[in-house]
Image (cartoon, rainbow, N blue to C red; front, side, top):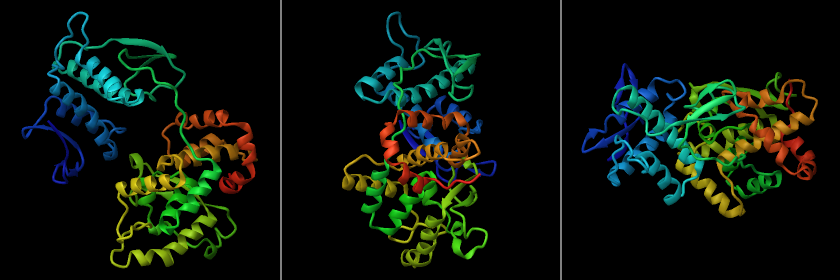
Length: 378
């Protein structure tokens, strides 16, 4: 069994499904898993983003390959006192492989959805798991594959208990250390753009050259500390292809402008992509290049640093600065909109992070953080 990504030749009703996960055995699709994936990923707006396809395909492939390697019949009813194939897979994933409970549960949710689909289409007679009632304070729709009744939700009983984890972020001095270690102008500006606006790394690497301007040359932006920039999925990679607006500090926009005028042409003289940031060869940054960049940076600074931590850093400190300022709007909604979260509930985790950070640490960095993250106007 193999998991491969479809090429651009997979076209359905005029739309290319390049990158769609294909489960193949001896040149034939693995059924009914492949049909489930097609229906599950193409009929829901939340799952129709090609950036998420590989994750779903990998989860189902991992389960089906496990069953194949261990001669476990995923269709068979479990014998009394014995685990089903999916329970066996869960325990193997957690115990033998050592995957985190959150990783195991993410895959199990898809597998449970697959089993429910199989029951509905009569590929199996019954589900190999039961449901349990748990209490949840989160609004309906946030947890996929969960059924809600007032403040109680029903979820598969085979899911693992997940210890509550807060996002990891960088402190101000760590941000400064990273910036000082990034002697490459392109890398330093990419880092600065992510940590000061909350952009994801794929959004940063696809950030359009056309969005950059000289703020001193425009009367409407000359005296502003933050410059509103509207992001469009027509111009760059945005999760769920959802447009949103970010606020870029004026000094950072000036740095980006001078990079576009002076630094970028040195790299883009042979290839002139539409993206602002170009690699040493003049082309667009690949995801593997960003990963390598941060691995090298982490080795130099001696502490953990990954692209998504910059997004958490921006969100936490911006929210904290707004709560301490005279901002007349809702800080939580402001951060939600800048990050492009679907629900404000996804943003509330940063409130918990603020509360758990040491008070003396926040106070000691208050002045520096205000300079770095403040300046938001209603």
